[in-house]
Image 1: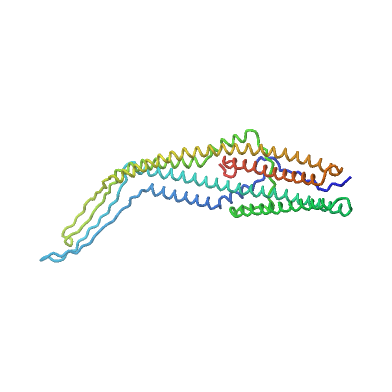
Image 2 (image 1 turned 90 degrees about the horizontal axis):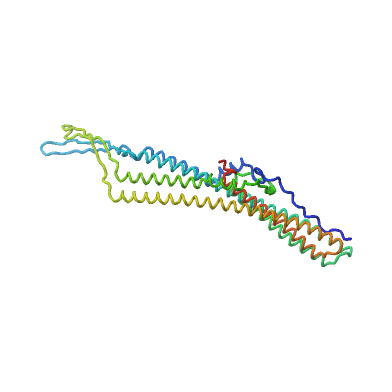
Length: 408
């Protein structure tokens, strides 16, 4: 009876079922990484800028204006006179305009805050994508490294049998060729894992990564949880909230521009001195611009922009609905695909064990056994890829629902 040439390819032990954060980075570190991401920092600064603009709107655009003049006048047969005048004027918003300005500011700040939250949401999706890229590539690299170790053991065994005259040189060549192919795949997958880690570190330098990528846990979703997450995607969407707040701001701005067709009046006082003080006086000033076609056109423009913002808000509802639906559909089919991959892997391992026993009994050629080993290796890689894809899809659904990392 021939001795088995291969170490068993172990069915990688899978982690505990998914309940909270298995396979994911520490939530506190994720929060720090998201806070430090440039897109989040920029969005937070835009909130500050919008708040400052809202404060300015509440105060109003009008300021006190001081103006004055000095003249030295010469009158024939009378002499020279010093003359001057000074005035203080200020425009005042007509009733309703101050309220509209405050409403615009409130809605704009609301929109900016929701856009900042959505920027954090998008950064979280990027982090999750790079994270699962790294874990998937690392899992494949581990599978490929184990395959290299198995084929090295096989080559050593075949070489020993050739020396003993129990195997042909052709079998040694076959085992060496299989080892060469496995080494190429292992080098490639190790490089991809390093590349994925580098991308993750580059985009999120504040995230402390472990030396080795964690094992990809086995998905285990409670019944009904995916539908619950689907509903939360629609409920917690900052994209919708931002679009609706922007629509309210544009509607208030349209009302404000309609009011602006009647310009704000200016009031003031004037002091003057003529003929070196022989004539002195004080007066009241009043002025108001007479609105024309320009103000009417601006009001029409604001009304059209408000209508466009309402359409954009409706479009945001469509986009989030699509996101929720595609998230749910992908999570469901990825989980199903992983189950099929697990079943296929179990069948491949069972078939390989039979092939090994047949080879030991001399009933199976080495070439057939090497093919079975490669097929089992491919099954391990396919299962790891399907497992990562399922976890990636579930993670995206959890982030889009704001259940994971976003703290809503």
